[in-house]
Each structure stands twice: as C-alpha cells, then as structure tokens.
Image (cartoon, rainbow, N blue to C red; front, side):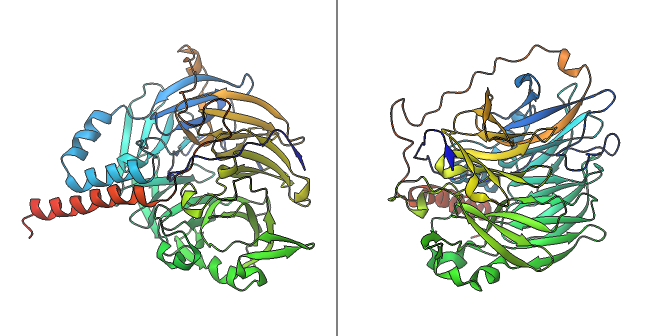
Length: 484
C-alpha cells in the first residue's frame, strides 16, 4: 500500500444526502462506461458540484480544472422561507434538518443532473423538501416538485433523460418524475430513508437502497433494529415493481457475523449493518460494490445470486477511542465510483480523511491520497481516466488519476461540496459570464498544526434540541387545527 502523509481525526455531526438531478429527453445519450451525458455538437460537458450549504452549484471545466460558472440554485429562497415560517410542522422539520443532518447548516443543494440538451439543471434541495428545474441561461426556476414528506435526498436519471428519480426521505418513497415538466408519473416504495438510485445502462432496472435512521444516536449493534427497515431493491422500470433484498440476512449468514473475521491470520472488522451507503455498479451490471454504515471498506455483491461474495477492509485511520456515536451520519465511508473498465474503485474514506484508488482484483494494492477533509462523494471524469472527490470539510474538489492513484489538483469550490455529477451545457453559455472567485470558505475545524478535527463525544446533545423542535411542531400543529 502506498500512501501520502496520514491525517487522522474527523468532525462529526450528521448529514444526509439528497440530490441534484437533470434530464430532458433529447440530446446525447451517455456512452458505454461513461458517467453522465456526453458532449456533442453545441454541447460542453462540465462537472456540476453541489455546494450544499451555500445553495450554489459550481461548474468545473475538466481541462483547466477551474470553476467557470457559479449558479444560484435557491433563487426562490424568500418565497420558500415564507411558506416554511407559516407552517409550524415544516418549520420544525427545517430546523431539525439543520441540527440533525446539516451540522448546524441548512441543506440547499444535495444532488443534481442536467437535461440532455444542456438547457436545464435539476436540483434536490433537502431543507426545502423539493426538487426544482432551473433554466441554465436565465437562472429561473421553471418547475418545482414538493416532497410528500419533509426532505428530499439523492436522485437518479435514466440514460435517455426521460425519467428522474427523487428519494423522499421521510415519506419512504421514490418519486418518478418527467423532468421536462416536473410532473410525477409513478413512484415506488422504499425502506426507511430512501437513499441512492442507479439506473442500468439500458434503463430497464434501478438499483436502489435505503439507509435507515442514520441521524439517531442509537448506534450500538444491540440497537440496530431501531434504525428501521433497510433494503437493497432491484426495480423493474416497466411497471416500477420492486424485488426487495435483505442484506442483513446475507450478513448474518456469514461466519464473520460476530463483528470480526480472521484474514491470513489477522483479525479484521466484518460489517454488521445492512444500511447501504453509496454503491458502484460493475460494467456488466452483475456485481455491486456496496459501502455499509460503520464499515471501513466495502462488500462485493452478486446480483443474480443475491450473495455477498467478498468483504474488503480498507484502512481505518481513526483514533482507537472513536465511538460509533461520533460517526458522521453512520458513514465510515461515503463515496464510491468505478472506472469504466471495471478494474478500479475510487473510494471516499469519509471518517479517515482519505481517498483510495483500489484495484478490484488486488485490493491490497490500493493507493491512498490523504489529507482530504471529510471526503463525501466520488465520481468519474468524462474520459473515465480520473476521479473527482469532494472534500466537503475543506470546500474543494480533489482530482486523482485512476491509473496511478496520483493526485492531480485541488479545485476551490463553494461551501460544503457533496454530490458531483457530469452534465452538459449549451456551447457559449459559459462565455457569457466571468468565472466567479472561487476561494474556499474558511473551515472552522482543526487549526494549522493540529492532528485533526474534534469529534463530539455523543450524538445525544444533537438529539435533544432536534427532538424538542419536532415535539413542539406537533403540539403547534394540533393547536392550529383545533386539537387538544
């Protein structure tokens, strides 16, 4: 294993994720093995970076590795806040999301995709509990879809751009939208806290996972059932029927179910949570690589056999005294991409502040890139040769070569970058405005010269005020509706 200087530590509070989506049924379909719509006549492909706490999206040129445009994704914030303040229940959830998930910040830009013709970007806005379509030329909201529940999260988009999936965190459903109009055309049920959705290349299936109640402080294995229902689902898009898989049964059937496993005489951790975080899909779509709550590594899952075929431990650089309650929304790792040839994974080691390029066949030959503050997502470049990792705690995007694991650049972006997606814009659009000054927001974590970021001792200090907000909201709601 090769590694640069190691960085320990980790800020923890909570976080959850949402989604920025894009789609318009016209234009270039993604090439095989590529991620996102491809550039074409009259279209430029750029990396869209969702700055969750800013409420902005930075558009990054893949050649110069610089921010060439900054988009406001909450142009309607005054109207939305007026609505929230007028509804005690919505206000309580808004404040609870800030406290529980946003680490004291509002979440305005979780996930995003663009239409295939490069005219529109679709953004999920967790704190505002909606998804919007924003015209890229004017910056205006052209449609808005409110959640049934109180928070929006990750999204997914079909290869032909005709269907947009949005996870409705508290309603436990995934909405299927026509992104041209923002109208719902279908939905399918999920477990608790629906999370990630990945379309198959032909659009006939969706690999979906729910993560459970990651914001609660009951993180010990003995309390695992309090996290709710967490499933892997294979969804048939012809009728949106669901084939539900219980990964927990899979884990309990393994000999390592006692939380450790011996590999070549050495004791390593074995996953004990079925909550799937980000996933990567092999090019032939027979294998899923799954990150799990509290697990420093990933598991390899055979879709047809419904079987975990391999468990891969990756470095855990946390102090030995770190407890589960200090993990960021139960995420040891949160971010996983796969090279177009299926040979390497790009892993965001969230709690340990590193990224890893891991050969699928020889994971012990991984290359670490350290000193990435709270890495929270990874995605491929348009040519598939590089991986982008969002350093959410340092307000930058780190660029790494797949072939060597070498760090290429760090790109300053807005406040708390999370999801990143390749998208397209109409040619000439980026020439209409000067590039913004993209100096990173100051990070209020470890001071220079310290060994890392401080971790909270327990999740309970967050639970008390957020729970009080929810209870107060329920009481106010009953009162305003004439209840007792």
